[in-house]
Image 1 (cartoon, rainbow, N blue to C red):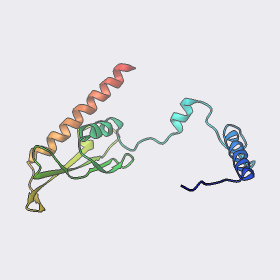
Image 2: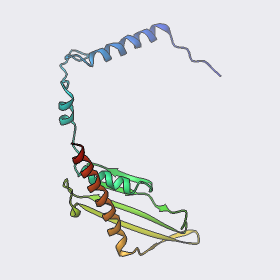
Image 3: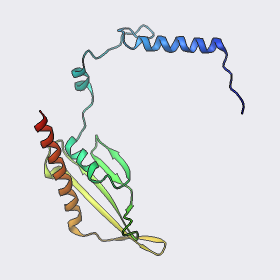
Image 4: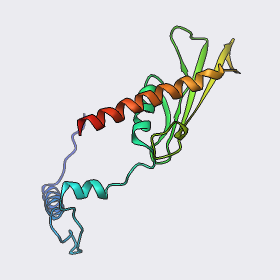
Length: 158
């Protein structure tokens, strides 16, 4: 195993530069003399942070409801959750995929749209298969029920 050697002056210079940069983070002047803006309080930090573009209860409930499926795409600002294909160990010859769209910042039933896709195995290939028309509605109802529970828990804690 070959050891990596660092020259002492380079290490000292790097350490001094890093310490200067870190100490400048809390001051009103930046590392290079420019004025930086700092948040004075925690409440200001919360209001300065970007808000989700969708209802947070629907978002969290959607993630919790679909937590058993691997996620392919997650966009909290656009309200999109796309899962990878998931095959249950009980039924390895069929797999499912879900797309969830949260369309509004309000906690309403029409702010949620789900699409469920199904494929079945034919030899080594997967082919599309029809899903029960009630499956998407059941997933939506489960998400809405959990979102209401989360909302009620939040209201009760205040």
